[in-house]
Length: 316
Image 1 (tube, rainbow, N blue to C red):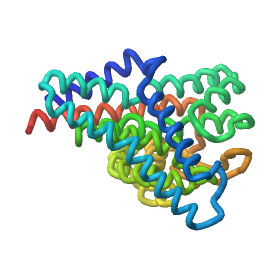
Image 2: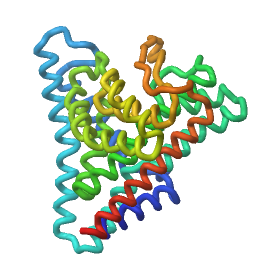
Image 3: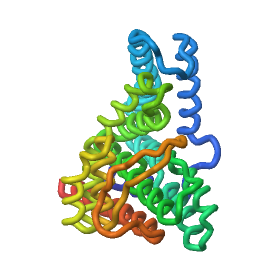
Image 4: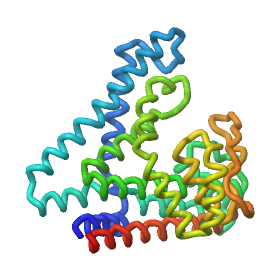
């Protein structure tokens, strides 16, 4: 029962306390990652420009891999060593604390609610501003339905990355596992862009995140189907997931959209350049009220995970 109890305690702490407003460990880790990346570029004399020679690209890939290893492996190993020599109570408490800092359920609820509230009140300008805090696309010219669609997509995808995947790795590998996942996921969020600056340097971070998220993302997609419209979710997952560039976002988004009976994707503007995202799901277009429905879907999926984990511990 120890793992299930730790999950419940960490989730309860997250819902009651939310993210700490100052001195969050992941914020400090992000600052450290920025410094490491800057020093790496100074060392190889590459300053935010696409390399012209193949040797420069290879050097960036090697240095990016080394930077990922330096930032992720030592903290994970140190935590594992400390827990190995700790007593059971200290290890359990430490696991709860680590998991609490690695999940973002309440933060996701608050950020999505900050978009849904202004939309419900007809304040589109405020909704666009709040949406800009959780998505990387340009939001200044989005209409109400487009804002709602982007918010729903963020809830579904981050429900996997920031909530269910940390729970998965905590169950599989304890506090060191969830720490390794969360640090790797943070580096992917910072370095995993296909642009001139990170195309080569961030490749290792992007690949590591793909590997660590592969099974959790599919467990999340299955969970969305179980707690929503099963047939539609499974159909969309099977027929549409491969349309996405991301091997993990595809199953999650397709299953989530199908489960909610809505359609996601379409045109989106990033850095003033319009991109076409594949159409996922089936049913009607997204409405502002679907933001709350997406959060509810995630909440039911979390409840199913906790119930299954507790049941397995009771039986085993």
